[in-house]
Each structure stands twice: as structure tokens, then as C-alpha cells.
Image (cartoon, rainbow, N blue to C red; front, top):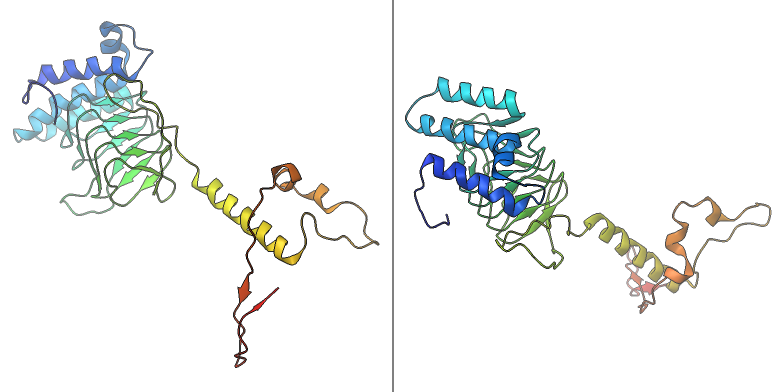
Length: 273
């Protein structure tokens, strides 16, 4: 937990929440505009009030504040959730944060994010986010898992396992991917370039295309399959992926012999094409 004042007052926390918006949203123009027109600020401010009462043993009134905040902002944050300093919910619509969720400092959530539980047990059942975590729009982080500091979660990902610090996760279920190196121009050191992430599906398809090229090289056949004379038309004219097979796009690959195991009791060794 950073900051000069290790134990700021309630109003100090709210002031920090307002100030941090200027570091993460270039559309923010004035403190008055942020304080009056940003639903994320309203939801977090009301949650901080409700949480202070929750810690004192109050239950109904903090829940009522949470209910009012949801009606006002369309953001549902349980008063029992522990939220760190300089927390920002951008746009805010449809964000849900459960009772036992824990959020570090300088965390940013986009709209549609859920920090949810997967158990009916009353104990710890919601995720814990480290400092400077960025969660993309529509992402779901489920269960009592931990995301380390500086983790980035791609939009619409579903995270169900722990994520080490300084990693990027994408997909359903989310998997760690090698993040693209991007210059971070934010003077506060918060990396909001959560769109600069690789596409693991495209990578898998590319691997399959490379494998097909190698198989074609071994078979002595490249490009479209042979069409019998009695049939008319070009096979590639009916293929939606024709551009992927263009000669200009074919990469030179070092073709190695491909061997297959023989079945049965024949032990004469491997056989190639």
C-alpha cells in the first residue's frame, strides 16, 4: 500500500480517488466534473462510507448504502469488500465486487468486470487483486484466487486461477501470455495499455498453417488439391481462407522428414512419406 500518509482519513481516500482519475482518463477536465459526473467515483465513495460502518459492526445500513449506490450508478460493491487507495472504475456500468474481495492500491477496472465467488461458503470466496492491476472490460475473476501486482487481464477473459505478478492473461479460461513490450508514457507508472496483448488463438492457427506447409513440402504438393478433370471450378475459389495460402504470404520453412510409428508387430523401424 503506497502513499505518503499510510492511514488517510475517509475524506482523504475519496480525494485520492478523485485525483487519480486525471492520471488514467484523458477526458477528465476538472475536479468538479469528476466529483459530480463520474459514476465510478460515486460508487467507490459510497462504498468507502459503507465499509467504514461495516467494520464497526453495522450490517443493514451499509447494505442499504450499497443498494442505493447500485441504483444510482449501476455498480454493485459489497460494503464488506476491502478496497485500497486510488481505486478507479472507468465508465463503471455493470461492475460487481463481492463481499470478501480485496483490492490493492492504484487498481483500475473497466465496465462489466466481475470479482465474483464460486462457493456458498461464508469464508473467503472472492478474488484478491494486488497493486496496479488493470482489468479489461467484461472480464470475470472468480473464486478466492490471487492476482499479483501489475497484472493485466484482457477484455472478456475469465480468470479462475492464481496469476503471478507482472503477467498478462487472456482467454476463457484465462492463460498467461507473453505481453507485447509497449512504451508507458504515464508519469504515474500505471500501464493502461491493456489492448497491447497477443492473440493466442491466432498464434495457434499460425502454428497449424506452418505444420500444413511442412506436410505439403514432404508430400511434394503445395497449394490447392488436384481437381479431377470431370469436375469444374477451382477448389480455392470455394475456400474462405484462400488469402492464407497465397504464394506471397508463404514462409520459407526448413522441412524435416516426418516419421510415423508402425502399428502391429512390424519392428522394421519408422517410415516416412
